[in-house]
Image 1 (cartoon, rainbow, N blue to C red):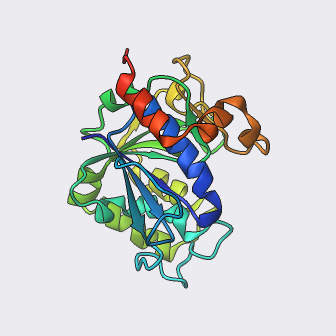
Image 2: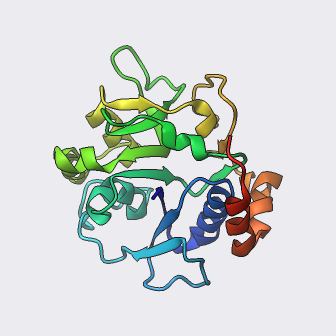
Length: 238
């Protein structure tokens, strides 16, 4: 089974659904996990969506170094997937401001067997000799490796002890150097990522104020779940 996950506060539930519908419609996952702030999601969802209420999470206490920054604790939850999904070894994570615009089944061919995760390098100055800094808005995670060697718990401890500019992304990058596999840029087409010429499949609208008006986003926002699931079932993958 191919598992994917998204995290959202209540104001982003609609965006999370849009991203997930695009993923399902383009054959990207069998099960999508929604990590949210409510025991019951406010709208009906198909069987391929599993809702997890993490409002009572204990991994990142209110006094933690990165819990009360401009980011909410929900942005940190991807750093504890290895503890929240104990039966899942490989997981695709997506930010809520992403949309899959083509068949994305090939993302599961990315080899992360010797890595903690696969992500696309950023083009900012944070990448420098000896440090390849990646954008983890789209991330193929090896939860088994993060779990079994203790790296996942180390990341949580560091996030609770040290404040970062981009909390979870910084911690994942700085603590996992040397064990980050390459994710082709077509799977995280973003203003911040290095374009390696691979076909565009997942668009990441980070830092764009007008992204919700993009026709590629509106297509899936307006699509009902039945159609999204049906498209995924009918898709001919290449």
